[in-house]
Image (cartoon, rainbow, N blue to C red; front, side, top):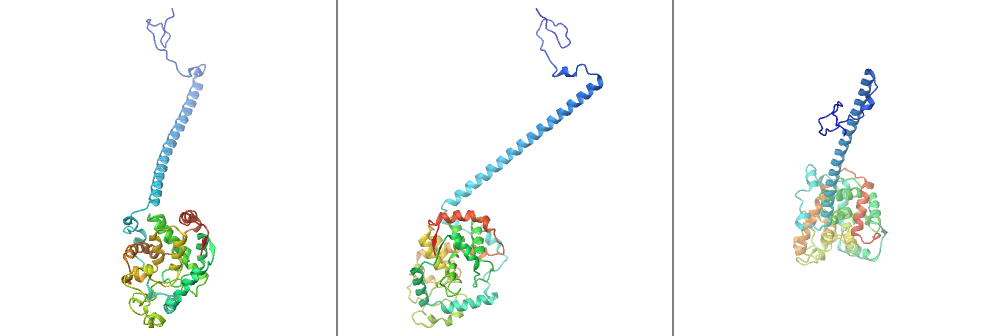
Amino acid sequence: MEHQTDRTGRPGDGRKVRKVEVVNDKKYQNLDKAKLLDKIDDDIQELNLLKSKLRRLEENKFQMQERIKILDSEEKKAESSNTSDNETPSPADWKDNTHTQIIKASESRQYRQYELAFDRVKLFYKEQHQKQTVAYNIQARINFKSKIRDRMTVWEALMKLNKLLDESDPDTELSQIDHSLQTAEAIRKDGKPRWFQLVGLIHDLGKLLYFYDSQGQWDVVGDTFPVGCKFSKKIIYHEYFRDNPDSKNPLYRTKYGIYTPHCGLDNVMLSWGHDEYMYHLAKEQTTLPPEGLAMIRYHSFYPWHSEGAYKYLMDEKDKELLECVQAFNPYDLYSKSDIRYDIEELKPYYLELIDEFFPNKIVEF
């Protein structure tokens, strides 16, 4: 029978004694004192190096875990944002501009200061007020329905607008594509529905009319108003209507003119321009809701949505649509600034948005 021994090699008392070994103790055998100390020092340095590597691995692991948490959080926010974009918000949601960022950012700037406007603005309205007659508006609508002016994608149309500077606008010298993106981005940042964002992008797309059969800018841009009844004094530069032939026509110069009380704005002929043109195109070639179509048609109808004129022509439906147009107006007006967005950077997002609401990629203008 073999005896159990302790670490010193002495015989034990018969009980089992745990055998303890020193790891790699053989490598220290047959070394003199100096070499032994050098070897131990080398091993200590190697051990410290291993500890340092382990600490870095732990730190990297921790950083990776934190990064995963951040990515998870961002993914959840993105999913939440996409969900809110695709949902149809209740009217109380998307019409509420209480927390609209663009309004807060514009508090220090004045807009529509026509008394300080360039001469080009005043000359524009003088010509517009003189020439926007019932006869011209009837003919303009006949021309619109009788031909197709061009075929192109919405994005190509937006690029074409780069060549136009709106002579009626006292607030900006930027191109129309810049204004379109400023408006759309302001709406997007406030988390409004996707169809609302598209309206911001295309609301002025009707200004393409300038490149086709317009007679100038007077029948393309500027504030709009009803023709066929008395011109409201709430219209900017009202005094210029004295040279409009309709002002002297007994049928057109009365309060209701050719209309009846509360006939509804659908039955009212508004001055021809980019609003009416784009409204009819959008109604036929997009899946925008009625609220979005109203924003396009009435966004330049300032005497109505901002000055309270022509309420006697409104029906019940117009009261609801007025709230929609007023929800859109701050984005159209207050987004105007010297900030220019990177068009190519925003292009993928808005191409997808356009495809969502324009069933046909090629639009007939």
